[in-house]
Length: 164
Image (tube, rainbow, N blue to C red; front, side, top):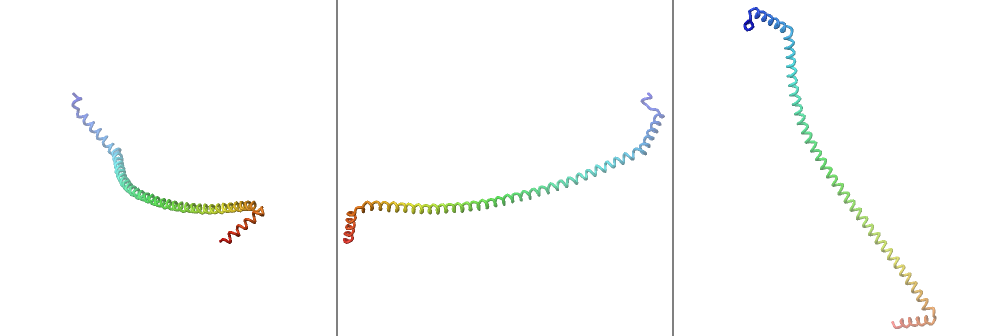
């Protein structure tokens, strides 16, 4: 039964040893443990404050980033529109210049064709004249080789002149 009900001596020595351990712990271990716990608590509180500050800064940066993205998109859209307008102007100018050059080429071709046509007409007329003169010379040469025929032809012409 002794195990179930402790003796007074056992309680005394247990209390004394517990008190001694408590004094030793208080003197040597309690202060360092408490200071370490307080340091840890301060470190955690500082980390929490720092994380909240960082979260606020990140939120501000996100808002700034979104604003910058909106501005950048607007500028990009504006640049695209301006580039499209400039491209349209360049295309219109190129088309106008191409039309002008085409009309100049066509006009030059018409003038060249006209000049070549006139030259061809002159050449054909000259050939016709040459052929006519040559044929006339041959006909007249055959006709007027005979003196009798020549006299008859002159008399006929004189007769025609008197009738008129």
